[in-house]
Structures are given as structure tokens and as C-alpha cells.
Length: 252
Ligand SMILES: [Zn+2]
Image (cartoon, rainbow, N blue to C red; front, side, top):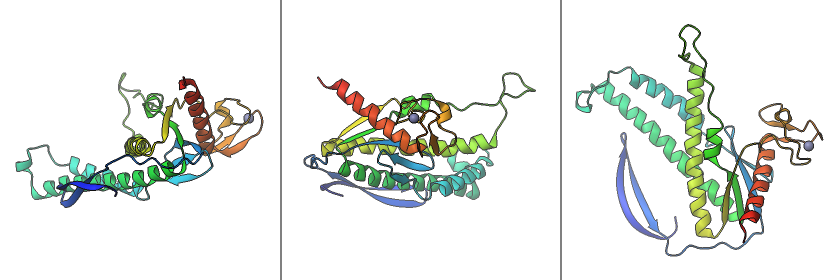
């Protein structure tokens, strides 16, 4: 932490107590120019891939934490809804367990986001990333209709689990981008959000855009020119290009 400590507070999450320090940074500290520009592609397997071919893995315990959280939420859901003062000791423990795990996920996410953002801001003058709002809109899950009840949908355990993993990941990217923008601003770096559509389907070598270019989750293979690469790296290269185009367009 840099700067002067401004406030000290103590906060409780479940049964754990934390000391929270906030620091005041007197002046933004611009970092020296590096001459480097980068695009990043955020994913589920890797937290992000960059246009230089590097990867940042997801917070190590995220999957494990998601599984534990799911189990704890299920255990909690078996207790009847009631006011806090009417809870039995077991019910109270179940409530605290869920709060504990939420807190753990939150702290891991924050720590990982700070480290990842700091590395990017130190190494690059210009950072392009996908606009998550556009991405979330174009990626709505497809529910399965129930054939016996028109208008209703089948419960799908797999989808619910994927949904939880997905929502934990989405929250992680949101926190990361907020921190990235703040750090970039104080370091005098430029960050641009771009429309993510087609970034994983467009060939960076020849420009051919087709969903057939992506035969598997991690694989990019251009059906027109034969270019082969990790799909997330291709996404990041396209994000960088879109970012540079946008920057040119914004210049007076
Ligand atoms: Zn190609």
C-alpha cells in the first residue's frame, strides 16, 4: 500500500473480523512510458489472455470456493425462512458459513484483481479490453422448455452450477476492470473498452470471420488461410486492434 493511512475500521464477515485501512494518495503518480500497447481477453479457464500470447490464470481457489459456496447455500436453503432471532443454532451456523465463504471469495478476487491490474499498468501505456456490458447481453443462457408444461422450463442442475461459476467469474471481471481503470488513471495510462463481438471468430492474419474458425474452446484455426493459435490469444489481438482503431477515431 502506498500513501498516508486515512481511515482504520474494523468489519465483520460471518465469524471473522477484519481491519480495513484506506490510504490517501496525495498525487497521481504517472509511470514512465513503455511504448507498449496490449489487448486482453477475459475467460473462464484463464482469467485473461493478452495479445502478446501470455496468460493470467484464474484465482487458484475459485472453483473450489464455488463448489463449497454452492453446498453451503444448499444446506442453508433447507431451513425455513424466519427472522434472525428465531433461528436455531444450526440455522445460524449455516447462515454464517455462507457469509464466510462469500467473504473468502471476495477477498481472493480483490487480491488477484489488484495484482493483475498492477502488472498490466506497469508494462503498458495503452490497454484495450472487451466491453463486458455488450458481452453479457450477447451471451444469455438458453433455457430448456418443459415439454409437459407449455411456457415452463426444465430445472437443469448443470446449468445452475455453470450459472454460479459464471456469476462468480463475471463479478471478478467487473471488480478487476474497476481497479484497472482506477490504477490506469492514476498512472497516466489509457484504457479503452471495445465491442467484443466477433473478436474470437476473426482471423488476425487474413481477416476471415467465421464461427468455423473456432473448432474447439481453446483452438483457433482459420478455415481460409490456415492460421492456428490459442483462441484467447486471437481474441486479445483483435481486442487490441479494435482498441487502436477506436483511439484513432477519438483523436481530434
Ligand atoms: Zn486467416
